[in-house]
Length: 174
Image (cartoon, rainbow, N blue to C red; front, side):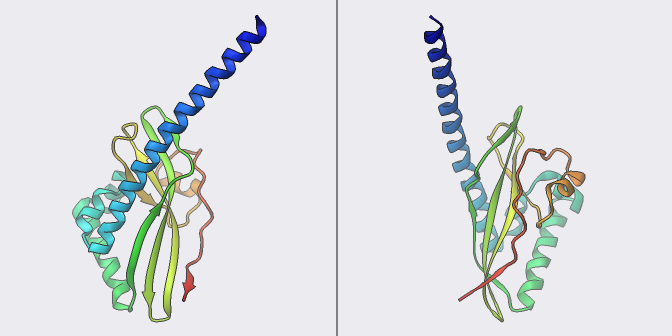
């Protein structure tokens, strides 16, 4: 009888693990779709739409959506004046999801390929994807290579369970 109970318990854990994996897979696809839609805004130079994908506390710190869109536009204009153009922007799927109630978070990698006066550069950066409503909507925050502790000082709602990768230097590609 004990062995049957043990087998049933193992089956329950297996079913829960499979359900979690299926749920994560669906959410990873959603995060990837939303992240790539955000990345497409960069290529289209649609900074107003780009800001709609940003984590609201970041927008608030910048002084609101219009101010943030203006700052993003100025930033891209500045690099373009130096002969840098963004050729492609994409997001890689996350590896894991952190859930605290309806607040879900994960880390994705943003990949930019840019043309510079010195050649093409591949740049990778970690973005934190945040959903306040159990995966119904997603916003993103660039960590700018900062360690998680530093990010959490400004944004304490960011989970301490996230695993941010070390900052990678841009690589010259041929």
